[in-house]
Image (cartoon, rainbow, N blue to C red; front, side, top):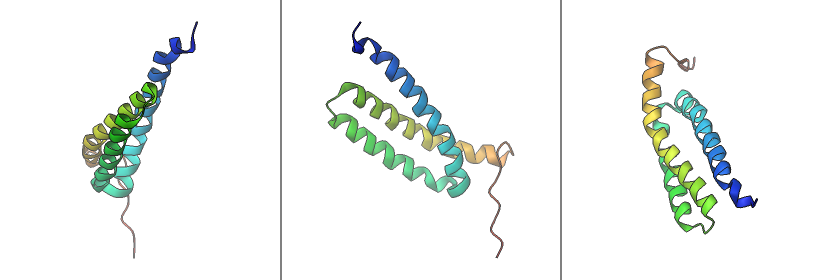
Length: 98
């Protein structure tokens, strides 16, 4: 058995972890910054897309692609998170008292 036999499992595990990481990032981003944090996900997605094209290693390229599209999907999720907060499913950040 060669190490490349485990490449699919490695990519699968890393994909699972990347997607799992973006869930709390969306929640925390919307909580602290509101929907205006969408541009950060856009910039991360564009950067990972560019890097994915430039990297020579196929496994790293794939993981950068997964990160890019997870980031792009998070843009939609930030706006959906605002609705979940509005419905009371998630806590709303309290306004600062002067």
